[in-house]
Image 1 (tube, rainbow, N blue to C red):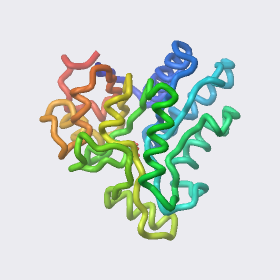
Image 2 (cartoon, rainbow, N blue to C red):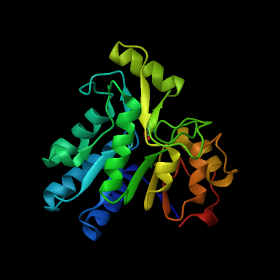
Image 3 (tube, rainbow, N blue to C red):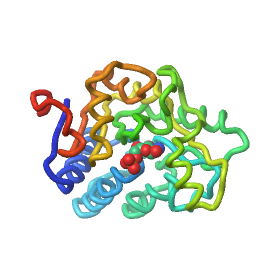
Image 4 (tube, helix red, strand yellow):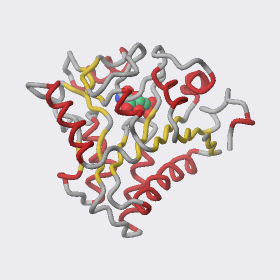
Length: 243
Ligand code: GLP
C-alpha cells in the first residue's frame, strides 16, 4: 500500500500513529526503529503521545535496525544516542526492553547473532520502520548486499561515512545492521521517505526491477508493507498507485 501525505506535519504524525496503533493492537509488540533525518520528528511525536495519552509500553520491545560502529554510544550520531534522545529517554523506558546492536565489540559476528536471536526469542519482529537511503539502502545494507544476508557489520555509504567521521573525529567507522533476510521476516513494514532527495530512488524502488543493486526494491516482494511518502518523495510515482 502507498500512502501520500500532503505536508510534513501530517507525514510525521501519521507515521507515529501507525506505531501507536501497533502498540494498542498488540501490547507486547517487537517494534524496530530507524534513525536519520526522516524519522526524528516522528519519534518525538510518538514520545509525546505515549506520555500524554498514558499509552502502556511496559510490554513493548523497541529496537534499532542498525548502529554506527567505532564510536562511543553517547556520540550524537550513534543510532542509540539518537533513539534515546528522540524517544526512549522521553518515555522513561526501561533499558532492558530497548535493544540495540553495539557500537563496539570484540566479536561483532557474535554480537549480531545474539541480537537477532534475542529478537527471535521475543517472538520476532512485529512492526519495522525503515528509512530509505538515497542509494536505495535499507539500514546499512548497501547496493550489492545479497537478499539472503543476515545481521552483520558492513561499510556505510561514502557520504554518511565522511559526515560521521568529521563529526566524531574518528575514522574506520562502519555500520552494524540487520540483514535483508531479517528485514523481510518482519510481519509488517512501514517504509518512510520524505523530501526531494528521495524522489528518484522512491520511484526506482517501487517501479523498477527487484534487484540487489537497489536493496529497497526487495520490499516489492514483502506481503505487508506500507510506503509512506510526502509529495516530494512521491513526485514520480503515478497517482493511480497511491491511496
Ligand atoms: C541511514 C541509516 C538508515 C536510515 C537511512 C535514511 O544511513 N543507516 O537506517 O533509515 O540512512 O536516512 P535519512 O532519513 O537521514 O535520509
